[in-house]
Image (cartoon, rainbow, N blue to C red; front, side, top):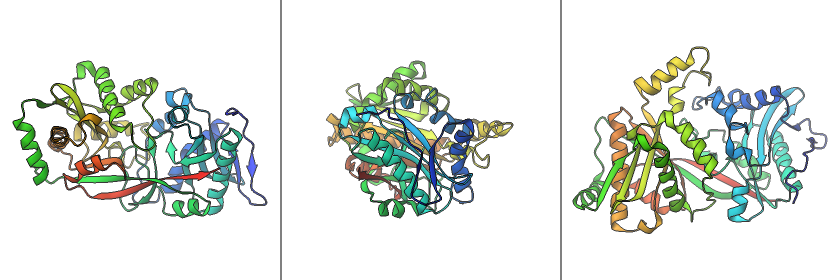
Length: 394
């Protein structure tokens, strides 16, 4: 298997679409700018922070990417970039699943354009075949632990931080190119009014939790921040280890994530449930950066950073997201485990409500993760978005 084989510049017959590797600084700018051009006129789209997007595709600043053979590709019509895609091989995925599957991500086209989709997917498939892969799956940006999934339902509402947007034409274009559903992932929205009270069933579970002296909840110990992050990711890895597509966080990823999240996390953003003093479950909630950056078109310079920091640190956001939550497997389906998880989630919601947050997205959740779906259902949270992972044999 030669995962370092050179990519070819590909054109498809007489079609006027050419796919080329990103090589120059200008190419990289075109790759980063394409979603702003593609979706800037969509009322539900939210511009990400450009500097953060640039860091994500830079192996010098993204330690996970530094370990992956990858290429960034652009589709061109003449001198205009009209589409983009990333193609890569994740060694951590192969080590765990041994399925000869490579991945794609960052799939965007300037407008509805099946010809460009076909060219981009063909280039990604050829790249992976050259490196011995037998299957392609995605989108992942760049792993299952980052942004992933193609939005297939919920286009009328804006995404929250680290969640993707797009257009309805992508899914049928992929399906006509031979791709089929591998897994769906759901986003749920917990909408809180001006007062917060846990709903009936959740309230009864919390009452049971409060009567049991062997159960308790604590929030983040900021003095031991790195150890706290390591602890919750250890719970997460245990909780999710049997789930579809799971890849554990690597040490470099954990260190990078801890550094990136630290400016966003206050003690009341992370709650840990303990059973007999053993950390059993947790819920991490983060303010919605997209809301804080709205109207800035992704740019913090020269003066956007003042407005961004005021919204984030002073005014606060009204929307937040729970990107990570989980409970150790040995407590799954146990009374004390369910009580502790329900109380931990409720404490998370109450703390954010006190900050002025009124909407909290719980995402993403695999369609097969019935344990977490059942916990979310306790809080009367409707499913409002669906994201899909597609796959295809090569």
